[in-house]
Image 1 (cartoon, rainbow, N blue to C red):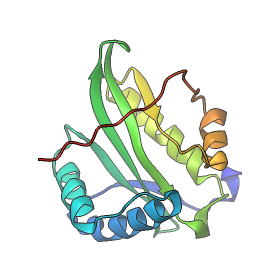
Image 2 (image 1 turned 90 degrees about the vertical axis):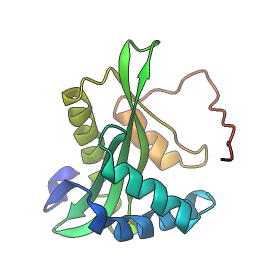
Image 3 (image 1 turned 60 degrees about the vertical axis):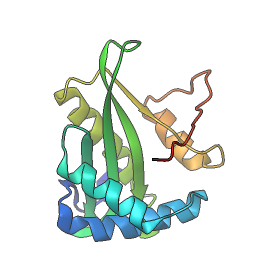
Length: 155
């Protein structure tokens, strides 16, 4: 599958890439039914691009053109014995899906995480996204017997 990809690169995002990534985020959120607030996304994305201690943002390029993005966040976990990374978002635009880019992205993020001393990689996927669940399972991610719960805090 990956042999059919002419040239895939994962480039660290800079502020100049935030507009492109924001458009991809809007497309991704629309597909997954996530509310999109451009100002909220821009503020969070810019902050992450500027502070590498929090995580990493990558533009996925295929033959030089933007094809998606990847966001990796860092935290510390007693359960996992240290630094943990969370694949916060992985999105490949429709024109580039089915070519093995997701598999390459997961291999890339695993390599980068190991270089950062990460002990475990985590991610979340919607119940309805069977294709993504299959991709993650094929790449060693396992479902846990837990529920992800969220409480939004207003500032």
